Image (cartoon, rainbow, N blue to C red; front, side, top):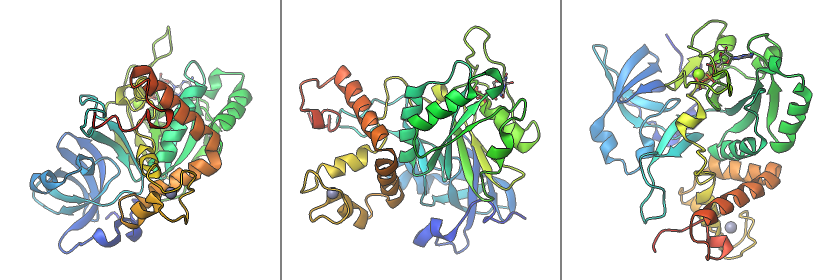
Length: 361
Ligand SMILES: Nc1nc2c(ncn2[C@@H]2O[C@H](COP(=O)(O)OP(=O)(O)OP(=O)(O)O)[C@@H](O)[C@H]2O)c(=O)[nH]1
Ligand SMILES: [Mg+2]
Ligand SMILES: [Zn+2]
């Protein structure tokens, strides 16, 4: 029978929220509309979200997503019921593609892509996919998720300039570990494989066709996932993976494979960094001192939000980590965001306000 600790569950994760009683802790392995596959100490089960419980939630983001730890009411005869999503230590979400962007007095709907991972693997292939600017943005988003970014340069067998890409990626994403490997030849695989500890979870993000599923298969030591050929003319993938899925590797680490980035639309050309740290920045604007470092200053709105539980500590921590280790990237990310926003509207607003608070007018 599965032990939830092997699946990454720690008591700290649940905090005071794990009022268990007759409920059982489970982890979401995959989600197909309303139907979920979960693992719990009774084994691998199918489950559904209890609509009554989840309708009452104000935040649609708390709807279970792959990687989430949830409390279920176990049903040995059919679908178990998911009663509650436990607090997340890290999360990746995107604005709902169907919804409008924030800025019309409405909160944009966020869809959670994956939760509770320790590392975000930014996967880029060393043919035509490597793109420094995209890497920079992914890295900022990864820091914002509450986890650590790793850069995984795939298809190293296709280039002679492995060393050049490695050093470029290290420069662009300081503070992130960088790997160059080939799932095909096995080059660099051992180093990558031994980086993760048992119980840790990684999520793979990257364009379609960069070899995410191939890499998962190489880590699994079997063809667990379907892979698809890339187009010959431009090396783009064909969106072979259509579902997010959490798999246990032989090493005891877990990996969440995702469909190609374009499909996910996390960073569609027009979306930029609109989700990265905007909440912290918004708070920071209300601090008494404009140069507040949000540590111990009086009148600090960030500290106040932390104390009131309105700002997630892990998120704040990664904001700080990004500032510390990756200050330049954060500034660049902000500039990108400013540029993008001012290119679309509100050209005449003061610079420091132009990318926030389009609401209310
Ligand atoms: N040369 C080479 N080709 C690779 C390597 N890894 C994967 N490929 C090829 O790249 C193509 C796409 O691989 P996938 O693993 O399906 O890519 P993906 O990132 O999962 O794509 P989506 O599921 O569409 O997002 C396949 O033809 C693989 O055989 C590698 O290390 N070297
Ligand atoms: Mg795939
Ligand atoms: Zn402050």
